[in-house]
Length: 260
Image 1: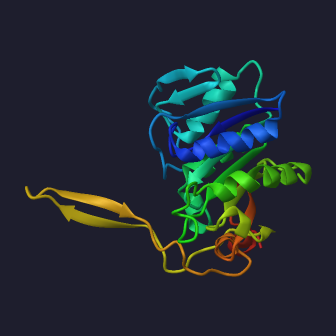
Image 2 (image 1 turned 120 degrees about the vertical axis):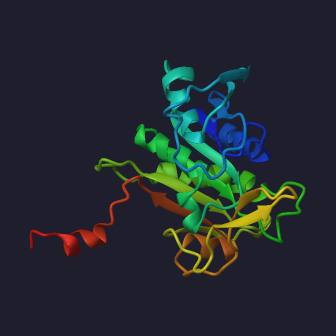
Image 3 (image 1 turned 90 degrees about the vertical axis):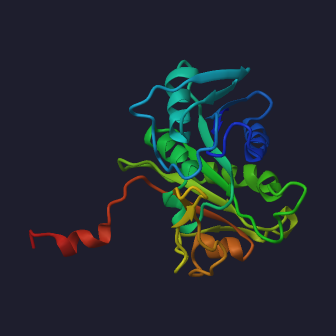
């Protein structure tokens, strides 16, 4: 198996080391793991692509590249340049430093890379590690991801449903904020919502009177509905949420239709 891995935390992020371990286990001794990641951190860029700017690409080692661009750019670079002659069988994005449950899905560059992979017709997975008091201070806070990651991805590949629509499935996997030996299992759940917890902008003035705005995230440990990704993670479970790039609000189509 040929696997392309990327992330949004940057080419030197610890989570990319964790992802390399997961990918090598999945690829097996005869497989290949290719890394194409942003040269700098690109957290929060979502599905952004460098449509109006050229990108510098640098080969750092055999099958390892850095790009002055975004996670979705890295996928495009892999499919149409670096691996153009022999495209990947699988795309893995992450392991993100922090969760991409609930509303975080909408901002995440980790998710954006997996979405681009799915749009290009390649099986794609976004992996993220929730942090909390039980795992943040571990020698390796990605412990749960490393131990359980390959098993979860393999189980989903084996259970992949038939694809008939215009937008291919991709998967959002979040590992709970606990050590690997405290993970309770895996749940297939919907995307949740942390009620009352939002991103916000906070001003700061310098001594010279210039004003800067800092974007700040909300409380990541707010309880949510029991059948959701975020609550499953807080309860100690790995969450798996199947996603599509189709953002149509199907529940509103009939209500808004003028052809009744």
